[in-house]
Figure 1 (cartoon, rainbow, N blue to C red):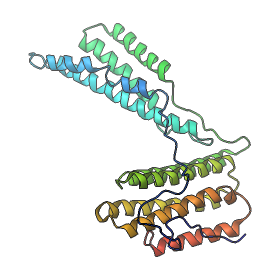
Figure 2: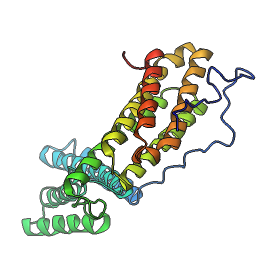
Figure 3: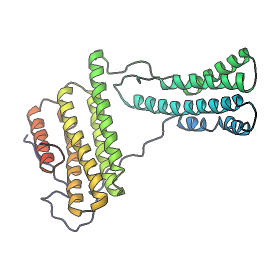
Length: 304
């Protein structure tokens, strides 16, 4: 099968009906990302230490500033704990979504539980003038309740049955790098200031994430898959970042149409090649990569 160049509605060869930005027929819109389990509870924890903040303000006129500093310090510790917990929940959700993954490098949930215990301990001993034993009991109970409510961080690598630890690490690193590039694409799309164009870019990132799931399920040819992901994803990132820098000021229709044509072609390529890249049809895949690389260079999205 010879490699084909995919043409979208905004390709130079297409016959434009008008200058309006129109989505392809029956577009596949990205699903709304569900909130991670536990996020609501973590958000609630930001409000729990507010009494300590009010207590600190109420002591600002006192002769002894130590008690005021304790209240403010404990408030800061508990707010920091809530923020670290929320980041830990996000990391746990990303871990659960992947078939091959390494545990988070930083055990954020465990750190959050420790910060909660220290904050409650300090507030009990120094702020409420309770004994050390009582403060230790309160702090340990708070840390234990935190762990019981939100759990611990993932501690083990997970991967496909029969895969060596080296292969699992190799796939996990490749997927993590690709996910980071996808996050950069989404961030750049948010700066464009056009909801229709942003949705088109989000469709592309959804197709890329679906291809990553295929790589995770069958990493028989990760070297070639990584080359594919690197060229296409980095090309999409560079193009989106450059477009986000230029289009909000220029509003140039040709720049917009060229960008949308590229996004359409990239999305079609991800959808059409995600299965073929793990098969033995290497020649066609290499041609596809070379064609895209040449196009990105000609349009000024990557250096020659």
